[in-house]
Length: 366
Ligand code: 5AD
Image (cartoon, rainbow, N blue to C red; front, side):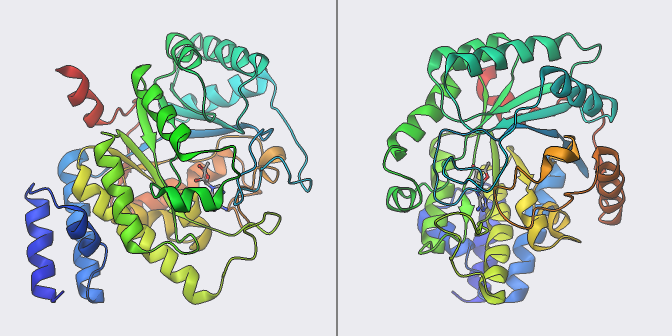
């Protein structure tokens, strides 16, 4: 595609003409560096039109790394014996939730390995109750894997507002290649529909730069977000984790740079196509570029950051991938750095608000 046609497509998409999947792939394939920059600038302009120069913050609490799944890419898969398994106590978790609220974050994400036994699901329900009793309770997002409709509903009733469950890849063949047989694409998709049915603001996302994945597959991922009418997106580059079956995937400089640039393009094109959804600039971006990764995600159209508020002592045992940043920084150090870097790019935190995706408000108002 010529630069001129690329600019036309960019403009028509920004103006609200919905691109088909072939056009989405074209948007993900800018013909030169100038066009790529124009893509990021256009997405940032749209982000600022919708949200202003404001960023929603969610305090991330990685409350347990005990997991019954065995995803081939993930550092906390059950077969990885190189990590110490932990679960934070209720008091520790509630403390972190309060810390996040005191920091002005307005929302927290409770993330853990996947378990669906009653002891676990009851515990999450109980925790939600305790967090709700804080003097100024933050909004709660859960990210605890696939659950039954009953459990999702129980968690909504207990006060959780949002749920994140990545589809990882909307191409079934890729999904199958990176998961053991028991984890199926159909089940994952059905779980996302249950999340929505239970009344959650629904979040999903994919990994970018998986072996064999092309921009065509990534275009289909965006198409999937649109079809599923998703409210929130979190996605980032795939980072090989050495203690996993996918730990030997290519990791040379060129491959890593490509994953990074594709991840930024995914953020930008997702913004242009889905418009009023929340899009996170993820830790995986920061892992590749510790100085500017998350900032570049925001400058490509993301509007959410999830600074860690957990205790340092657990951090190293929650490495979904190698090279996780801020392993030795506590919540307030992370906050200080984040504020400085937001200032640098002309964005500011939106303090003390839950930060709902306008898309959710719009689709549920009807
Ligand atoms: N590289 C990048 N992202 C990963 N995740 C898990 N393992 C990796 C990895 N090696 C992501 C998955 C999961 C989210 C919590 O972390 O997308 O859904």
